[in-house]
Image (cartoon, rainbow, N blue to C red; front, top):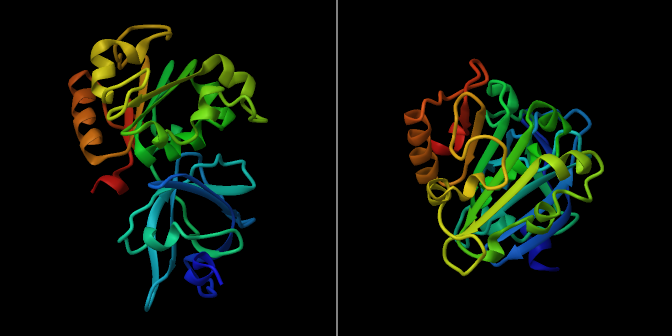
Amino acid sequence: MSDGQAVLAPLEPTAALTVEEVLTVRHWNEHLFSFTMSRPASFRFRSGEFVMLGLQGEKRPLLRAYSIASPSWAEEIEFLSIKVQDGPLTSRLQLVQPGDQIYLGRKPTGTLVTDALLPGKRLFMLSTGTGLAPFMSLIRDPDVYDLYDEVIVVHCVRRVSDLAYREELESQLAEDPLVSEQALVQLHYVPTVTREPFHTTGRIGSLVESGRMFEGLKGDARFNPETDRVMLCGSMDMIKDFSADLESWGFTEGSNAKPGDFVIERAFVG
């Protein structure tokens, strides 16, 4: 029996959790992996939301919030995760193989959704690391391209190999059955690396200061609260710093109850 098969004991559904099967696993490098799992017929979510995911602990399910990386229409559910060798959940989750069982929460939620934003012309999705996940969900949703003229995905990582989904994004989702035509015209991908040579380097703030963020876009070479909407997901430092910048530029944070100019996922920030 392999390590991956030995990790998981048979699971039983609960009032809050269904039991789903791992379908595929993709290891991007030694620190990063993604996987797909079965989707219950009753599972409904908005692109950009997160859900509780986990395995059985010693006495109770061991759960963590994960952003869904697949769009709301997909038949499978996809997640992107880091590998933490001594992490209570991820040390085990990184070993899963097709056929293994995982707990899935029944109630997805979150604020990284278009409902929490006011109408605009440009939608910027600024991410670090696995913060890319909800944006992979959103950019594969046709509704997003109907709401905005341009959709810009910025992904800041330490190493080139950390650029998960790079080929799909560089091709502007050419293989996607629903959005390939719209994405070809409207989707802009801006990868940047901080610790290795790459054609774009530096943190997200430096891309704004240099104007690299806005190359090839229509409109201003700066953030404009009249036309731009922004989503932030990733490191707490990036989110806090950039939220402060956006507010200083006249942007107002939005929520499901009161849409605004930018949104963050407060469940991950604390």
